[in-house]
Image 1 (cartoon, rainbow, N blue to C red):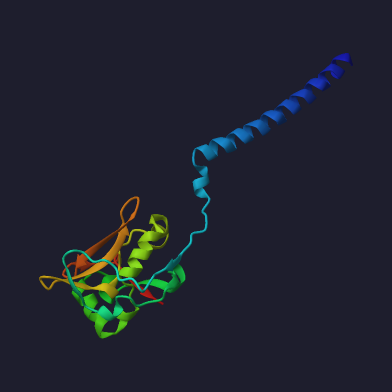
Image 2 (tube, rainbow, N blue to C red):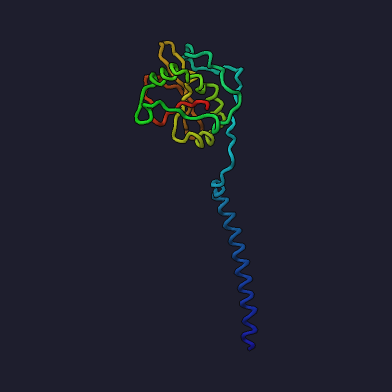
Length: 190
Protein backbone atom coordinates (compact mmCIF):
# COMPACT_ATOMS: atom_id res chain seq x y z
CA UNK A 1 0.00 0.00 0.00
CA UNK A 2 2.81 2.35 0.84
CA UNK A 3 4.29 1.91 -2.59
CA UNK A 4 0.97 2.71 -4.21
CA UNK A 5 0.52 5.90 -2.18
CA UNK A 6 4.04 6.99 -3.10
CA UNK A 7 3.39 6.14 -6.74
CA UNK A 8 0.25 8.28 -7.04
CA UNK A 9 2.00 11.61 -6.46
CA UNK A 10 4.60 10.57 -8.99
CA UNK A 11 1.92 9.86 -11.63
CA UNK A 12 0.27 13.17 -10.76
CA UNK A 13 3.60 14.93 -10.98
CA UNK A 14 4.23 13.20 -14.28
CA UNK A 15 0.83 14.31 -15.61
CA UNK A 16 1.44 17.88 -14.46
CA UNK A 17 4.91 17.89 -15.99
CA UNK A 18 3.55 16.44 -19.23
CA UNK A 19 0.81 19.06 -19.37
CA UNK A 20 3.27 21.84 -18.60
CA UNK A 21 5.75 20.47 -21.14
CA UNK A 22 3.01 20.16 -23.79
CA UNK A 23 1.82 23.72 -23.11
CA UNK A 24 5.40 24.99 -23.31
CA UNK A 25 6.02 23.05 -26.56
CA UNK A 26 2.79 24.42 -28.09
CA UNK A 27 3.91 27.96 -27.27
CA UNK A 28 7.37 27.30 -28.72
CA UNK A 29 5.89 25.78 -31.88
CA UNK A 30 3.63 28.79 -32.38
CA UNK A 31 6.56 31.13 -31.87
CA UNK A 32 8.70 29.05 -34.23
CA UNK A 33 6.00 28.97 -36.91
CA UNK A 34 5.58 32.74 -36.72
CA UNK A 35 9.34 33.20 -37.00
CA UNK A 36 9.37 30.95 -40.06
CA UNK A 37 6.73 33.07 -41.74
CA UNK A 38 3.71 30.87 -41.16
CA UNK A 39 1.69 34.04 -40.82
CA UNK A 40 2.15 34.47 -44.60
CA UNK A 41 -0.69 31.99 -45.04
CA UNK A 42 -3.08 34.35 -43.31
CA UNK A 43 -4.42 36.45 -46.15
CA UNK A 44 -5.19 39.99 -45.15
CA UNK A 45 -7.92 41.78 -47.10
CA UNK A 46 -6.50 43.81 -49.97
CA UNK A 47 -7.66 47.28 -50.90
CA UNK A 48 -8.81 46.86 -54.48
CA UNK A 49 -10.15 50.39 -54.81
CA UNK A 50 -8.32 52.51 -57.37
CA UNK A 51 -8.39 56.29 -57.31
CA UNK A 52 -7.37 58.23 -60.44
CA UNK A 53 -6.84 61.98 -60.67
CA UNK A 54 -8.38 62.58 -64.11
CA UNK A 55 -7.26 66.23 -64.14
CA UNK A 56 -3.57 65.28 -64.53
CA UNK A 57 -2.33 64.02 -67.90
CA UNK A 58 0.16 61.16 -67.72
CA UNK A 59 3.75 61.42 -68.92
CA UNK A 60 4.51 59.59 -72.17
CA UNK A 61 7.75 58.04 -73.47
CA UNK A 62 10.22 60.09 -75.52
CA UNK A 63 9.12 58.40 -78.77
CA UNK A 64 5.51 59.53 -78.28
CA UNK A 65 3.95 61.61 -81.08
CA UNK A 66 0.19 61.51 -80.48
CA UNK A 67 -2.70 59.48 -79.07
CA UNK A 68 -5.10 57.65 -81.34
CA UNK A 69 -7.99 58.68 -79.07
CA UNK A 70 -7.05 61.89 -77.25
CA UNK A 71 -10.65 62.16 -75.98
CA UNK A 72 -9.97 59.08 -73.82
CA UNK A 73 -6.75 60.39 -72.27
CA UNK A 74 -8.39 61.64 -69.06
CA UNK A 75 -11.68 59.74 -69.21
CA UNK A 76 -13.08 57.14 -66.85
CA UNK A 77 -14.30 57.02 -63.27
CA UNK A 78 -12.24 58.75 -60.58
CA UNK A 79 -12.70 55.79 -58.21
CA UNK A 80 -13.53 52.14 -58.86
CA UNK A 81 -13.04 48.62 -57.53
CA UNK A 82 -10.67 46.53 -59.65
CA UNK A 83 -12.34 43.24 -58.83
CA UNK A 84 -15.96 44.34 -59.14
CA UNK A 85 -15.83 46.94 -61.93
CA UNK A 86 -13.01 45.85 -64.26
CA UNK A 87 -12.64 42.68 -66.29
CA UNK A 88 -10.20 41.14 -68.74
CA UNK A 89 -11.59 41.03 -72.26
CA UNK A 90 -10.28 38.84 -75.09
CA UNK A 91 -10.81 39.12 -78.83
CA UNK A 92 -12.42 35.91 -80.13
CA UNK A 93 -9.21 34.96 -81.96
CA UNK A 94 -7.25 35.14 -78.69
CA UNK A 95 -9.46 32.64 -76.93
CA UNK A 96 -8.28 29.64 -78.97
CA UNK A 97 -5.08 30.96 -80.48
CA UNK A 98 -3.74 34.39 -81.26
CA UNK A 99 -4.27 37.57 -83.22
CA UNK A 100 -2.38 40.80 -83.84
CA UNK A 101 -2.73 44.01 -81.93
CA UNK A 102 -3.87 45.71 -85.14
CA UNK A 103 -6.91 43.41 -85.35
CA UNK A 104 -7.77 43.97 -81.67
CA UNK A 105 -7.41 47.73 -82.06
CA UNK A 106 -9.58 47.78 -85.19
CA UNK A 107 -12.28 45.71 -83.50
CA UNK A 108 -12.32 47.92 -80.38
CA UNK A 109 -12.56 51.07 -82.52
CA UNK A 110 -15.26 49.79 -84.89
CA UNK A 111 -17.41 48.39 -82.08
CA UNK A 112 -16.93 51.59 -80.02
CA UNK A 113 -15.71 49.37 -77.18
CA UNK A 114 -12.43 51.31 -76.95
CA UNK A 115 -14.27 53.86 -74.80
CA UNK A 116 -14.73 51.15 -72.12
CA UNK A 117 -11.02 50.29 -72.03
CA UNK A 118 -8.74 51.42 -69.26
CA UNK A 119 -6.06 53.96 -70.20
CA UNK A 120 -2.54 54.91 -69.12
CA UNK A 121 -3.84 56.88 -66.12
CA UNK A 122 -5.57 53.73 -64.89
CA UNK A 123 -2.43 51.68 -65.50
CA UNK A 124 -0.31 54.04 -63.42
CA UNK A 125 -2.86 53.89 -60.59
CA UNK A 126 -2.95 50.07 -60.72
CA UNK A 127 0.84 49.97 -60.79
CA UNK A 128 0.88 52.10 -57.65
CA UNK A 129 -1.33 49.52 -55.85
CA UNK A 130 1.66 47.16 -55.95
CA UNK A 131 2.57 43.65 -56.95
CA UNK A 132 0.41 41.86 -54.35
CA UNK A 133 -2.80 43.38 -55.74
CA UNK A 134 -1.64 42.81 -59.32
CA UNK A 135 -0.89 39.11 -58.70
CA UNK A 136 -4.18 38.62 -56.87
CA UNK A 137 -6.17 39.79 -59.88
CA UNK A 138 -3.98 39.23 -62.94
CA UNK A 139 -1.71 36.29 -62.12
CA UNK A 140 0.44 35.21 -65.10
CA UNK A 141 -1.04 37.89 -67.37
CA UNK A 142 0.08 41.04 -69.11
CA UNK A 143 -2.92 43.39 -69.11
CA UNK A 144 -3.41 45.96 -71.85
CA UNK A 145 -4.69 49.52 -71.63
CA UNK A 146 -6.28 50.07 -75.06
CA UNK A 147 -7.67 53.47 -74.09
CA UNK A 148 -4.16 54.90 -74.62
CA UNK A 149 -2.97 53.62 -78.00
CA UNK A 150 -0.15 55.95 -79.05
CA UNK A 151 1.66 56.65 -82.29
CA UNK A 152 5.42 57.09 -82.47
CA UNK A 153 7.31 59.45 -84.82
CA UNK A 154 7.43 56.74 -87.52
CA UNK A 155 3.66 56.26 -87.44
CA UNK A 156 3.72 52.87 -85.65
CA UNK A 157 1.08 52.25 -83.00
CA UNK A 158 1.80 51.05 -79.46
CA UNK A 159 -0.40 50.13 -76.50
CA UNK A 160 0.68 50.34 -72.84
CA UNK A 161 0.50 47.25 -70.65
CA UNK A 162 1.20 46.11 -67.11
CA UNK A 163 3.03 42.93 -66.17
CA UNK A 164 4.53 41.11 -63.18
CA UNK A 165 8.13 42.34 -62.91
CA UNK A 166 9.12 40.23 -59.90
CA UNK A 167 8.96 42.59 -56.93
CA UNK A 168 6.97 45.29 -58.72
CA UNK A 169 4.44 45.92 -61.48
CA UNK A 170 6.13 46.78 -64.76
CA UNK A 171 4.76 49.19 -67.36
CA UNK A 172 5.80 48.97 -70.99
CA UNK A 173 4.49 49.55 -74.52
CA UNK A 174 3.84 46.93 -77.20
CA UNK A 175 3.80 47.41 -80.95
CA UNK A 176 0.44 46.53 -82.50
CA UNK A 177 2.18 44.39 -85.14
CA UNK A 178 2.97 41.80 -82.44
CA UNK A 179 0.79 38.82 -81.57
CA UNK A 180 -1.64 38.67 -78.64
CA UNK A 181 -2.36 35.34 -76.99
CA UNK A 182 -4.72 34.17 -74.26
CA UNK A 183 -2.60 35.66 -71.47
CA UNK A 184 -2.95 39.22 -72.80
CA UNK A 185 -6.42 40.59 -72.01
CA UNK A 186 -7.61 44.13 -72.50
CA UNK A 187 -8.79 45.68 -69.25
CA UNK A 188 -12.29 47.11 -69.59
CA UNK A 189 -14.84 48.67 -67.30
CA UNK A 190 -17.98 46.60 -66.65
